[in-house]
Image (cartoon, rainbow, N blue to C red):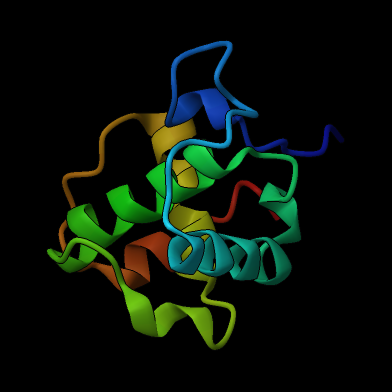
Length: 106
């Protein structure tokens, strides 16, 4: 069975997958924490990882940046990344159950 690989190009233009982006020191620290919580995305640059987290915050939670999600791993974030990569744009709003069932990446 082929192991699922998260593709940073889902959230940034091809060629920018490892780009550091332009973030404040505080935001870079939060993105570093995302890398700890989600080793599946550790190979992504800050631009892609921050973009994915910002998109998830907006698409799912209807806020700009989910600051409280840096305390513990929430697999619905990986479900969101997987959904976007395999199914396209998210139109499900706040549907944590759907994202948690999106487990193609496991």
